[in-house]
Length: 288
Image (cartoon, rainbow, N blue to C red; front, side, top):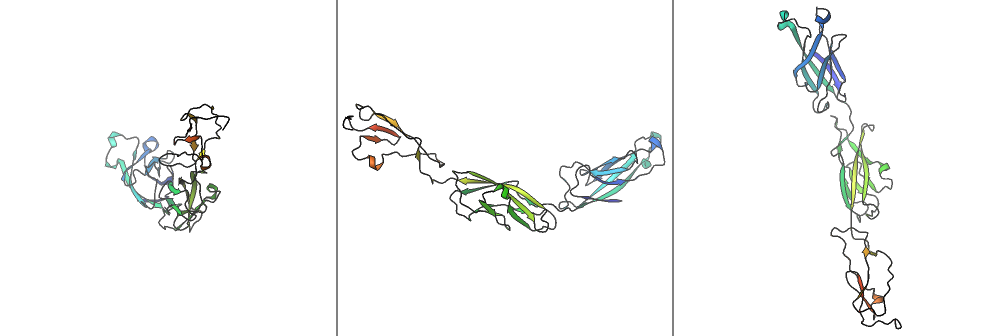
């Protein structure tokens, strides 16, 4: 029985150990071929023959999932060795041999693991300072389950708009926000092990600001309108339009009217669709 150890961080192709077999023949008749024939590590490990020494070299294969001490701390495989050159006259039950190999997976200190690859949060643009936007969560994947503390990578939040609670991962506001200035904020949160600060990981957090109606509409331009003195009542003389920095879910709808100072004995009226028209039948240049 052979026993080997391999760290869980070992990559594909990493050597695990060597199996030694002997053959009293020489030359090509002594060449050997090793195979893994059974065991729970058949998909995790690979064995090849060292052409110089004829040893069997066990290495980490190309598994669908990497080695993970927390999920499976050990494997057992059965190795078969036989000659590459077999004379049918001498084939018998003794023409091959078997060996059992036990491979222990060693625990390696790994960085914290976030439960999500990224986080999407939403907050109203008028939210007060201190309001929680959302939370992130990470854990130490090692058996020791070291405590994790959180922080914001300030290179992703130069204006210090947000902060995160070091203990529970709650993201909250440090300053007031304005969707019309920036509708999205993308920051990075770091999770660090208490027992080993060198072990840390990062996760992107995308924060979308929800619009509120906090901006008054403004006219799209400054209007200067000319009208003929014999223009008929009800005739359209100008169409005005407005814009709004807000973004209502149902779209913009404006109500137009004359300013209070322009309504007294006015020769004009404004329809709700933004059209200015004559209201008096007679309009004289000499009197107006």
